[in-house]
Length: 310
Ligand code: UD1
Picture (spheres, protein in one colour):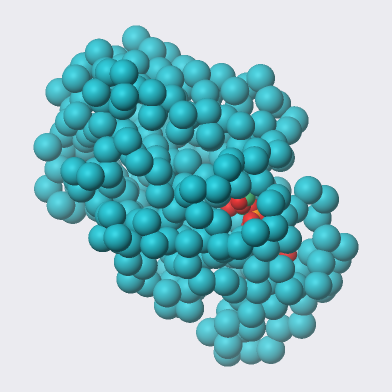
């Protein structure tokens, strides 16, 4: 089938696109290269249709949805701090862009749209694990934008019959995650520092935990979300369902690197939530999702990939 991946040159989008190509699908990518990179497509660039363009352009999206059965909507401004600084711009991309994807999908009779939502929608309610039945409590423009996108999906499903699935990603990590931005995920930063022989900084006491999930598991969840009939109109947490503290994370990385690492401890980062953990029962029972690559194995694969790339 023909599939459109918005943000297909980005970290997660490129992994989804690569798997779709490998599975024999015709893949069309639209990316404005705001945070995507052409290098992310290395190895399969000759087997995709790549369009440089912006999801704020409804006419373009409508053309790109022509003949597509499925859309994976991964394009977004993905940074919480950036959304705090530039709420108008992130609103335009993350809300209007998502509405455009839905409008284009409806107009071109796309069967299903799968949306990259975020654990950010849960906000700072300390109750763990996070379940999809909990009320969203956004505390940043980014979170407002992601939950609004999810609400639009639900409405397009109910009103217009577009099949929609929202995936709430927790802390995704893996190859192609850019470590060089101040908004980068902690794992990409730690790996970058360790391989450069530098010392990582832990903000706070390191006892805060996250539910880290290797990107291949996220790709699995997306493929299931694209195919399982009962998923239409639903939202799912995508995570490992396990907690790892920052101190544990660094200990695993140090072990995999075969050396001792003494981090620098700095004051906690303003605005950070303390702990995060997902319940993934709904994705397990309804999608048949199971995280195949655990955190340690994912970290081993990431290190191997980064060592080869240097
Ligand atoms: C993540 C998401 C964010 C989402 C939020 C809420 C990423 C990159 N960000 O933020 O979009 O809104 O979940 O669910 O996935 N840390 C260090 N040292 C560093 C960098 C970070 O100790 O050099 C710490 C942070 O203070 C934090 C933890 O590592 O306690 C995780 O940070 P980060 O990877 O930025 O992700 P979240 O804050 O969970």
